[in-house]
Image (tube, rainbow, N blue to C red; front, side):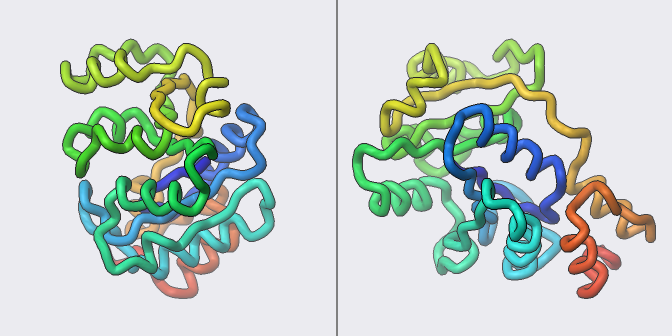
Length: 210
């Protein structure tokens, strides 16, 4: 199971969500995959290597979480399909692979590269805020969801790929945008992100002049 993202910077909301998913699903570990050059959003405020190092610092003392540097180290754009194809080659045809994303990302899925092929290689677990009813999604995505939606989370754990499951989750009220803004304003984001990450940001003077 993995969570992708720019992690610009990684914060306690990301980490708490990943840990809750690990405990809820009973998987051994959740892997965080920082994106290299994001295809569907603005360029991050930090370099790929800086973002990768912050994720490494954030998970260094938590065995339930790990980091995968493949997108940062790749020479190709960070298309999720390419990552899923590589993971499937490594894990074999029978291993369940679960890609986790927030509802905002899921609603933008029809703009992704070969998006309907993602389920050939993995399941998609969508994290929605409580009360989400699906009507905000476009007709194409609604039809895709109905076609592939799993009736129970167990389907994601007992089959290799092909299902969508929407899980309501109340996230911590923390955002990377909020953290970057605070740093730019000369304010402290302490306790919103792990202490080693905050120390790294201070040491390298990240975000201060964005």
